[in-house]
View 1: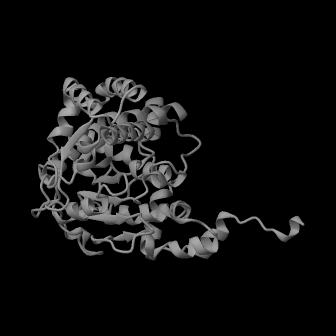
View 2: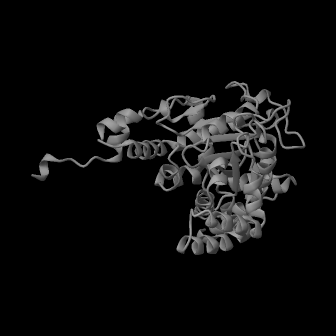
View 3: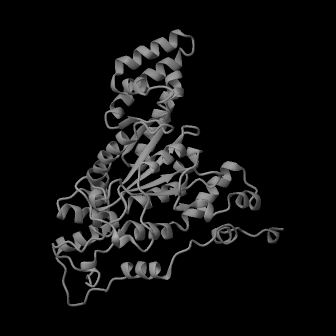
Length: 396
């Protein structure tokens, strides 16, 4: 009886539903060259401090952090900032991503990265607008209102996944993300290639990967300022799945990464329970990913975000709004007690968050958003990278 069934492995799923990402031979050769390192000689001895330095710089983000520190620069000056856009369904994540892309310059054509300009004082790559690169991770969407340089739909066929494996819509989205995450190392290779280029003065120089001297290695020139990642509408399919953790960890191990949590402002102003639900979800994502989080109150062209911002900044004003909400008969009893207790707990959480009001439809507030993202990227360097260094050194 059991012989009639065959276990479907991940390789089977990949073979049926995943197409190979197109990567040039030169890119693969460069990746193998970067990963290969000559073993140390038997007679050589390594000082403990040098060994710690080598271990600490094993990840790309740690190498760039050390390089930025040695040059007295910020991490976002030597590496593009990755912005992962998340939020509840209907909050306007994709429209917001499109608004962000419109405020950025397109990436240089492939093969012409070396012609880019040096980094300005403000951290941009020069030439006016910052340069952006977009990724779409929603396999079920039919229309993407922005130019996605990497699109999950080009790799995974969402409808075919649903059909072949008898899955519902949400199960097919999660499976598509899981399949895509098996190829995400190739996505990182593409991002690394497009984000950096080696200056002409160092192209002919051979760098010893085992060199542990205090002089920093030649660093690639930054070609991109931002990498935008749009996630599926069903937030739990990305944030609470294994593939979401893999993708988030992979991006944060290569680039300074910031979460942009998009909130539907009109719904939050209309209902305090919706506001509290969004804040609790943002809190859970903050502690799950350990990444800097920016609360984006979207649709400010419909309802201004000042009310929600006041609730986060002033505990007494939120309590007054809660009393008014209860007097209207929309809540009471245990609900009121729970909401007051949670608001007291979250009051400390709000002090660590960065928040901004934005209208994805009109583009208002996008400039303020980029300023807040810059502050969050600096927080990533001080907090996340420092914690990552400690964890790497403990394991090494």
